[in-house]
Length: 181
Image (cartoon, rainbow, N blue to C red):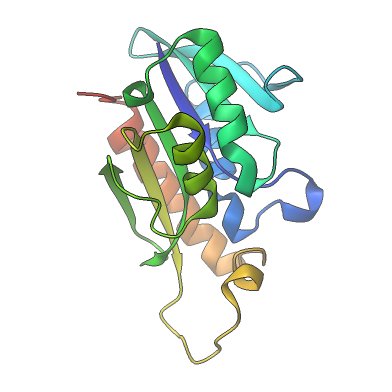
């Protein structure tokens, strides 16, 4: 069994914001692999959908705890399903990666991402895969605080770029689902 967690913030206010790139990716995975519509599970405080990818049961999770408390949901889901941390992928935004790019990392520190920090703290390990979606901008002349920048909505052009990157992630990474290998 595999677990794919998309990080973001719940609510209409945060839809299509940079910090919700993980939610956007999980939605795309659900669409591409024909998962049932996710439903809210109060036990985990998350939207959950179960399906099959490469003949393996896979659970998609969108924590509804807000970004900085994502670890609470991830720990509850792992404990309930008895999944090892190395069998999960956490998908999230990354300000240090230019928009239009992504990186896969395993067993790395949070890099300042508070949602990832929460997961590491709750699990007591960093031994999981992270798919980091770039949200960084090349024009840094309009310097705004990070906390404000990540909560802004993508422009139309940026959204198109991020959707292309998410499509690459689904086709090049999720389809082969080499978690923990």
